[in-house]
Amino acid sequence: MKTIGLIGGMSWESSLLYYQMINQSVKEKLGGHHSAKSLMYSVDFQEIKTLQFEDKWDEATKIMIDLAKKLETGGAECIVICTNTMHRMANEVEESLSIPLLHIADATGKEIVSKGIKKVALLGTAFTMEHYFYKGRLNDEFGLNVIVPKEDERKIVHDIIYEELCLGVVKEESKELYLNIIDQLIERGAEAVILGCTEIGLLISQDNCSIPVFDTTRIHAEAAVEFALSD
Image 1: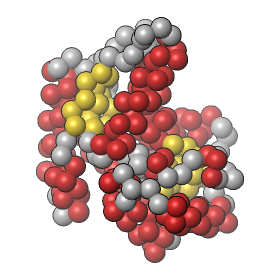
Image 2: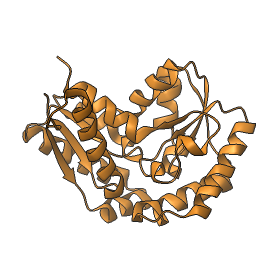
Image 3: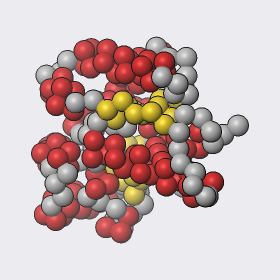
């Protein structure tokens, strides 16, 4: 079994899910008392959040590269960034390594394409919904037509992530707001919805939606396990 290197803490609420899902998957696949070989470097998310909101992405990139290198030095055989937003600097991180970086959008794109879906809605932080690094990769690499909520709806999605979900707060009224936004996206032709923030799975699941839901946390965790157990 290969050792998975996890860059976590963004937020620790979703990193907890990664750790749980990865180990549950290994146990299901191998049985017995098997669990995943992994290393996690967990950051102080306040420091990262400050850089995000101050548009200091170059500084954030240096931190992410440093973390990835530390995990590689520690024995990790792949890197998993446990957040969608910080894949903004995935290319720079990957170029600094001699081990693979398992990109969350690639894992998600493969699963969406396998279902024959062409037009998909994306929910996430404003950075993920509005910047090209995520939507562009899904379009360029997988031919997906990615749509996002309208500006006022994007603010609702973004604020709930940072002000509630990243703090472990789950509100029924926030779930209803998300579901109303998803309904608007369905009216615009969305065939499925990407939960493009690793915390959104705390709020929304397939049980809540009439179209397929792609939970990036679960998909990314499964991709990590698949790599770890591959020959």
